Image 1: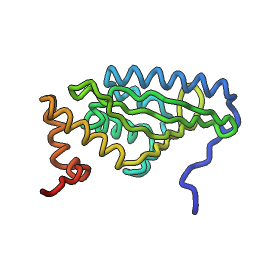
Image 2: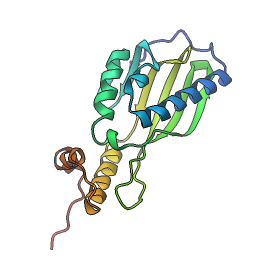
Image 3: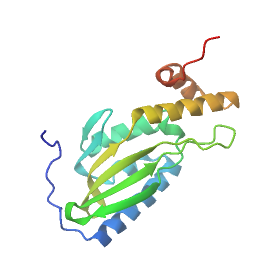
Image 4: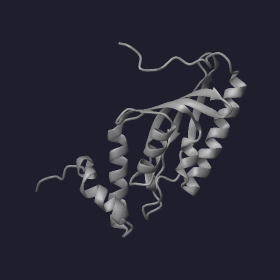
Length: 183
């Protein structure tokens, strides 16, 4: 099987400490974006020719495709109801200029103070100067869909189901609904 990843000319040029520092900056910026909702800032974390591999949608090519995806995805349910994207752990691989981490995607309180979340593995390739040349998110779409559906069900129980979530629940979310027992 042939790799879809383009070769990077930054492999081996950054120390583990530099990668840790760059990743800390990435995490700080993403935390600020989660509050502000300014998804332009997210796209601006990437080089002009960056690739973003999103397994359910394919590969986004370039900063502007990443920008369009971020605004579309993160301003619609369920992305719009996620409160942050903290890394639970990370490792750096200096020879490949990569940071690999597990990202948590918690959703806002549906009304009963429960925590509903799903996680993904992210592989970032550093390009230098605070920019990333590639991101790949590896996740289970079923896990994310079931988490979003659980959120909708709880929010509805507590009178907190907004229009966007209700529309998702009736369309896409129907695929993730638990089967009802007969009888």
